[in-house]
Image (cartoon, rainbow over all chains, first blue to last red; front, top):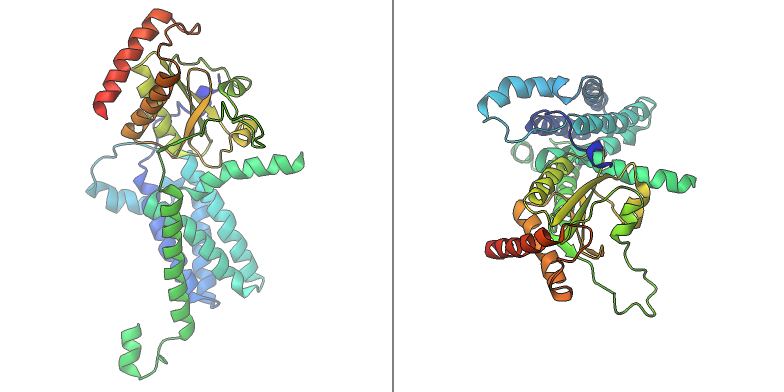
Length: 153
Length: 204
């Protein structure tokens, strides 16, 4: 039976935490896009990249957004009605790190449009997460898995 | 920003037109994203019935959708006497957990129902053959193991109950009495079936 392989994980984190974090990330990414080709844009994008790196290393609850949520927002809310496995949001941090990381590297290499374009892609994902609770990277994971082996075969 | 510019000078010279353009682009992007979200999820949790081509198999190029037997070649499935739900999940999928918990809960109330969760990442052949692009996707099979319909996304309890009722109605037309199903304890399946149908009928 393969039934237990996707279920039966340990009780997880408050799912509202990653969504709040995504809203802060989205705000930073909007600022990045508005800053455009200026050095400020690169600095803001680097800040986002660093946040995602922290999220990959420690999980979403270990980011500065997670700390802010736990300190400022969570005490004002009722206890969560459901809990979430920390693995999907952590994977989303990884996807975010790749996208913004590529934008930052290209931007540092002098490809001026890359900062805006990659920040915009990341903004779509962060906005979907914050506003609708959708983890875009998580959804693309299976599609990616479907595409890769079929090309190889 | 715009008002400030208008006060300062008759033109928008005080605000960098590039920033205005970028701000408009951000607003447009988020609007487009919201519309795409609404479009993609407008039937989320709803049962989308599969058009049955049992009698019109002649001359159609489109092959019949795979049956429960196809799922059985990949994972062990104990078919339900009335309906079987197969949920395709993925490793990084929070709504899959919620959806699986709901199906498990519903199936526990009725021995004529069966549920199995399949990791799509480990059974990519199944995700291709059933055309699963997003998770969770719940496939609903009837007594014969024929695919009745599919549900994209995590259904609400009402949606899931209605989907199972739909399956019961479909079977009711083709098979008024399925108590002779050899896979299950015949007598209990028959009685459970009638009570469950009544219960679901009352909720509708």
